[in-house]
Length: 151
Image 1 (cartoon, rainbow, N blue to C red):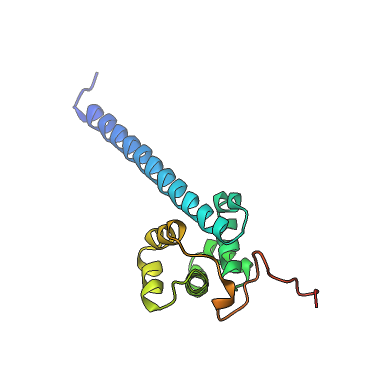
Image 2 (image 1 turned 60 degrees about the vertical axis):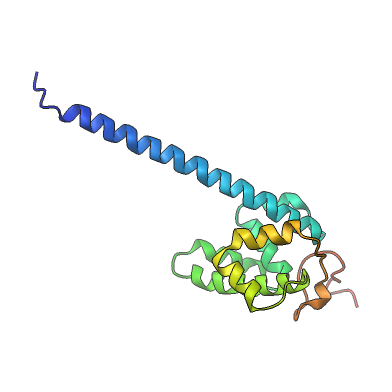
């Protein structure tokens, strides 16, 4: 038997990697659940069905449409490199959604860019109401939005 001591070190390294992966997954799922829960509160305030906040990618599709952007632009976030375009449209949507929740201004946009979880949390739990008429564009999704064929 060749026992040079490396077997124990490799097993310890593998165990450490496994622990790191498990901790990462638990933290990731916790943060996702927190953001989805807060986003569901934002959706409910805007008259959108809250369950839509729990579906990955679709939640940002709905968010884009709430902000007057085309929902399919959220799919661009799945393509490496092109996801920068989706991030720009997400910022535009956040600007409009923030305006509809009485949060206009560059400061609120910067909060969305650098601390989006805080931005969503503030909108989810403050006393603001959804007033899409305060947006510079018409939302593509939500209550009181006439269909394009209704005239």
